[in-house]
Length: 125
Image (tube, rainbow, N blue to C red; front, side):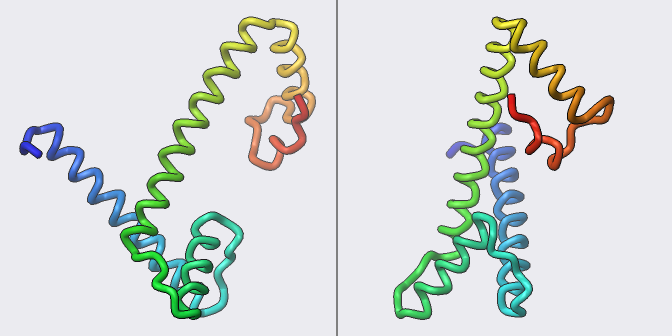
């Protein structure tokens, strides 16, 4: 609560995150009204569900609650991903034969190119 340098920085970052999410949500809601939105991601499903609740007389989630849900999934997902990648590196360093097998598979699928999102689905190991 004290206006220290760190607390001021945290509040500013929080304001930026909220502003970015507000813009994303507003854009998606406009797309939904025009019927051009793809509701195949978490935000689309959340907003569609919220819209459905309101049409049936339920209160639904407030904008602030939607933003908090987005922040929760983003930051929790980021931490989960970093832990997964760290453990993957640890395990591959402990088992060089699997490391070699995985490296060969990446080279076979991607060649000398940087792996793309599409090529990742072709990796089995």
